Figure 1 (tube, rainbow, N blue to C red):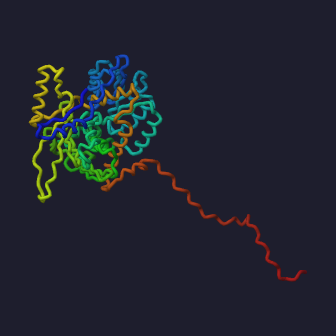
Figure 2 (figure 1 turned 90 degrees about the vertical axis):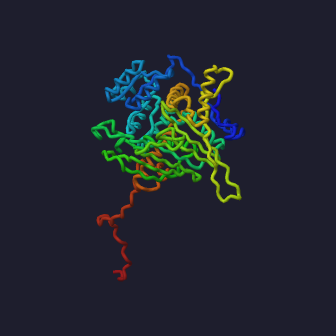
Figure 3 (figure 1 turned 135 degrees about the horizontal axis):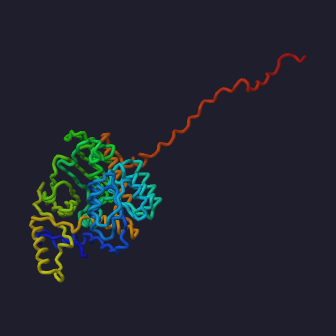
Length: 474
């Protein structure tokens, strides 16, 4: 598969710019080996609520895996999901029974966050490969415990559901950063804005569908939304934050929820680089990409240019626009604003014209789409949903033993950021990431203090030596 390319009118940027950008774009993900049906990975899905059922739909498209088991405490959800799967999976209400099923090689875990660690632990101990949705773990002690446990099971694949690492566009922008196309990247602005976002279902805390709204079960907006963007920032910067500050509020939704309904945070990375993050539940406007997408996206800002991008969904696949940094004003001018410019679309292989093999209609369709991109009337999109790519990659890694892009350490770093960010907002302080090194670990017992020695008992006192007598000998 050929590399994606960037496109624009000739007067938008120079031939040298085009060649530089084209060389910077990452190659498309390697075509994964197609296995025979008998070699398909036999997997089970634990948790078939909204997210689990969504993953089952995407797994059904892949011929490298075979769903043999499903598990959920909700019988209705279990039955409805099983009916959608053509492989007639066995149904379990207790995940431990699924883990005891000798036919299951791997599990996909899509349960509420507070259950992630226990089920992942039990799955590893049962000898299964694991794909667990983000955030990987919920509490600080689980960060240390899962790292130690995974070290005892080095041959088992453990992947976390951070699908942006499996996106061609995100891989491409990472390569642009590494190749210096954007200069020195100093800032990333990211958001996930919804309106209204999660709503309280009848029953409050007694309704399992409301688990995201209560701190006993959920990390709130940090765990469910911000975790994706923090992972991207770590990946793009090639480092973890040094500290985080932030504010959160429960200001607009008075429905009994405990988690914040808006959060704003700043992460400081080595070298003074920053990630600014915002999640709100009162407006879903996304002020990038010509405002053609809602809710979530990010801007990567460097000294030589910037990229606006978003992951998208099944109906709006990932896209990105590159903006070159305007030339600085001449020395004779005290200040001058640069002229307007259009973003340069990053074109994926599906839109590149193959003049030798494409049919007339295929060529005309691609050229028409590129004309629409150039006019700003349409955004180019990635060829495939990265959810499909991450799941296909997981199944492939189970067979090959390759290390996942979103592996254990990626997942634990992401969970650490979620845990510490919530602390920063709750305690209204700067939280340093090195705090996780001792957080959640058992407190060592204080050294015993020496007790003052008691005076010897009179019964065992030795008599004092007699003083020389001054009296004359008898």
